Every structure is written in C-alpha cells, then in structure tokens.
Length: 316
Ligand code: NDP
Image (tube, rainbow, N blue to C red):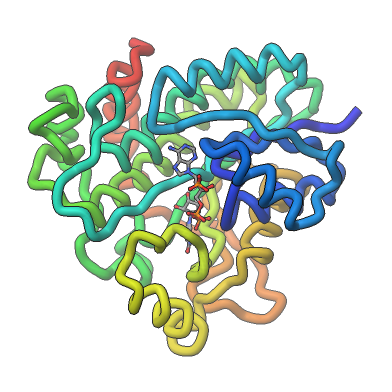
C-alpha cells in the first residue's frame, strides 16, 4: 500500500511541485487546498497520475475549516504518513490588516495559527501511521533569519514578549508583539512561529510519538504566486535579481523536489532539523543543517508561543 502525505497549499508554487514530486516517488498525495478546481487543474496540467492524488478542501485562515478538514481526512480512511505545512500568504502592500473569521490578523492566522491547529490535531494520526518513521515538515524561509544575508533586509521579525498574542490578537491588535501593523514583518513573524512550532513539536513529541519533525528553506523561488500581491515591477525584477545578482534563484520544480526529499529520503531522518541548500545555489549543491535565528532557537519563547497559540486556536 502507498504511503499518504497531506500537503497544504498544493495548488501552486512549491506545494504543487512537492505534490508532483511525491506522486512520482510513489506516494498518495492529499492536496489540501482552498480552491478545489484550481488545485485539480494544476495537478492535471503537470500530468499527475489521476490515482496518485486527491484534492480536499481546507482554508488555513479559518479554524473551523481546519477542524472540518481533519474530519474529512479521517473519513477517507487513509493512514497519515507525512504532513507538509506549506500554504502561506504574503501581503506586503496592504495598509490595514485583514482578519480571519475568528478576528485574527490574516497572515499570522493562515501561515501559523491554522497550521498550528492542524499539526496538533493530526499528531495522533501520524503517531498511528504504519510507517516506521512518519514525518511532519514545515516550510521555513531565510527571511526569518537575520543571521543570513536574505534575512538582514528590514523589517526584521521580532515576536517581542508576544504581548499581542497574550492580549487575544483581535482588533485593535494586529501584530504578535502588539506593535503597529507592518505586513512584511507580519509574514516574517509568522515564519518564525513556523520554525518555533517545529522545534517545540520535536521537544514535546519526537520521543513519545516517534515522529520526525523538520523544516527547510527550499531556496528563493522567486517566480511563485507568493509575490502576486507585490508591485508588478517587483514581480518582474525580483526573479532576475535572484538569478543573476544574488544567485539564490531556484526553480519551482527544484524547490518541490527538495521538499519531497525532506519528506521521503532516509538521509533526512533527523528530528528538530532545519535544512538548507544555502543562499547561493550551486550546481548539484548539497543540503546541510542550518542554524536558525536567535529568536527561533529560544526555547522559552517557543514554549510561551506554544501556550498562547494553543489558547488562540481553542486547544487550551
Ligand atoms: P504560492 O503563493 O505559490 O503558494 C501558496 C499556496 O498556499 C497556494 O497553494 C495558496 O492557495 C495556498 N494558500 C494561501 N492561503 C491559503 C489558505 N487560507 N488556505 C489554504 N491554502 C492557502 O507560494 P510559494 O509556493 O512560494 O510558498 C509556499 C511556501 O514556501 C510558503 O510557506 C513560503 O513561506 C515558503 N517559501 C517560499 C519561498 C519563495 O521564494 N517563494 C522561499 C522560502 C519559503 P491558492 O492557490 O488558492 O492561492
């Protein structure tokens, strides 16, 4: 029987290519997406074998939808052998925060809180996997990390003392640190939470549940729809800049292959790890374990972030 992987946000970009790569490696792929027909068309356009995948609805920005997805997935009777938390939104140009149905700032709600709930609910399913080593992989990014070149551009992420989370994270609060709304920083903060979540999952559940938790930075995939909400000129120049100046450019295919390796190859069996192929892409470049930012390696902050997030998603 095939192993099953759930991939969030598999209707475009990195997630779609990861779905394609894992289906080619013989996995059964559950594409967890908010737009079913878009995801179906995307899978068809890549020629994915019809019996190697299914599309299921999830809106990561809505906690109710995340819970419904878990019910629907369980009703399918499939075992869960791997989960990839990939979906994200990036809204660099908005002036006022958008809100989730629960009233939370939408990029943190989608990128972090929705995935936080999903991971917690599916832990049991991963634990019960017949696979000897189920995996949970969360997409990270270099922009979470001011120690790296790509992470030095302001605004830098900073969760502060999580005052915004502690105060309930609803109007008028829009940032985790409780400060003024800054959409680029909100995205970076959400990605710091993704890395903290991975590390805290590892600390809490690796031994007891036998799950391998990891994150990766797949390289700068400058052509994806992640940048659709940026200035048109930026969308034109950014890929060229990454390809010819910084050398960080990675194709969507390659980024998907990298995610698929971290999900399925024996060499990526280290739990708590953050994988990278570096800032400058070299031909046949090898992956390595990368240090995460100071904030993302702060264990006390990870624990506090965990407890406050659990409250916000209704788990505590
Ligand atoms: P894309 O915008 O191409 O893909 C994002 C995916 O997330 C889409 O499938 C989108 O669905 C989905 N999505 C967005 N909001 C929701 C929601 N509320 N519910 C369900 N699905 C949702 O971006 P990328 O492929 O570039 O990004 C994927 C991941 O890779 C992200 O976690 C990002 O942080 C990470 N990453 C990307 C890098 C890059 O350079 N591009 C670099 C480092 C990390 P829809 O198609 O309906 O919009």
